[in-house]
Length: 182
Ligand SMILES: [Fe+2]
Image (cartoon, rainbow, N blue to C red; front, side, top):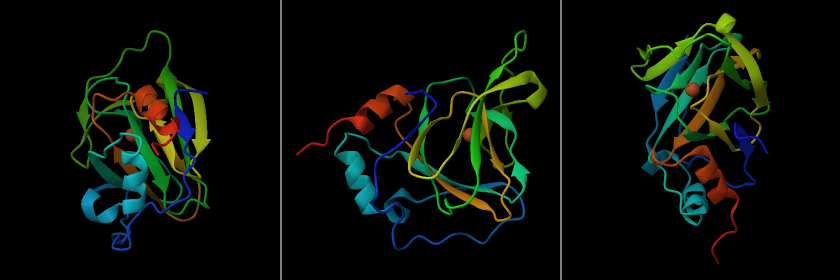
């Protein structure tokens, strides 16, 4: 088991019947989602039984043929995960993780075009350490440098659920794979 991604054994609904995709943008974009209305009750219940409570969430759009910048979400390196689900998951859309090459220091935070903070590095300053094509509900590490490549001819829509910021990838993973409360 690695500590970068883990596919969750969950076959239920992810988004509620009220959820509608926004109009397809021309560029990479981050939309906020409304946890109360957009996420399926079935998924919330699955998480609550494992003592996991959703704090917020995003909807990421990656255009066809697009490779996003290599980054860490937030203002510093961290251990936090996201629970991601690609809505059109029968298509290609690869998440990759990287380490900084020797001698390259962690950059200062920048503001993204979507008004969130991130640490961004050049591809030349990194080495790929893992990649995964998200086909199912998947816990992913967001505190290690990563990006998304969408070689497909259609856009990639990805729901990304976040938890209490004090919970690390490993803590959330252990809760997710623990036996359900009866
Ligand atoms: Fe990210």
